[in-house]
Image 1 (tube, rainbow, N blue to C red):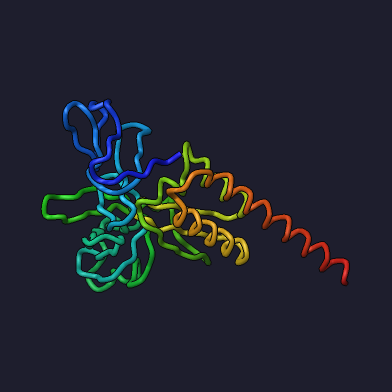
Image 2: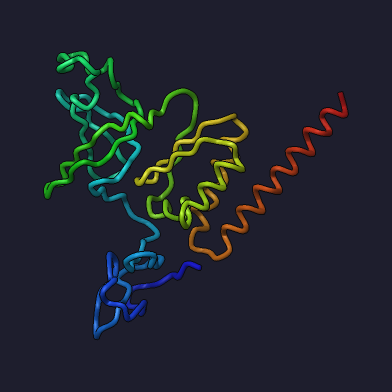
Length: 233
């Protein structure tokens, strides 16, 4: 069960595990902001709202917004733009991409999956392209508050595993709250609806059971409709 707290709420006496969104007073841990307590490793308070703040090692889905040699400028759903150096897209055997040809590799509005390789004190964000996660072919991109990503993943990946299996879709969840879904149109529609449902109800208890029940019910209805459609023929 997820515990909702407001600033000043007592959380724990385990001060050694106090993390982001908390403060220590009198040997106890208190909430610094309004949000949900996450105590799987360190004790954190995850805010309900807010813009994604990139950190080194995060895997994000970005959108190319500008080409400024030798960088692609990338929107990563953050207050700060990121940059991808042209060397990240240089094919094997080529030393560099020629000036004026960067758009032939990655163009405006292209989606990429990248890892945050560096964030400096001036919030200059460098990215590394992750070729093993290419967003190719048909699919759809949805965006949720980045704070809800852990709920979409679930404990030990339980929620996302269930979504993939029951929606019969490929689903990639990035740290910045962007989610790529690919599959049949009806399956993608179902996956999108359920993910948004989880994001909206992330702070409530019994969510996993409700999601499982909803997906099972939807599957039964779909099978019933298909059966009836076959009989009418």
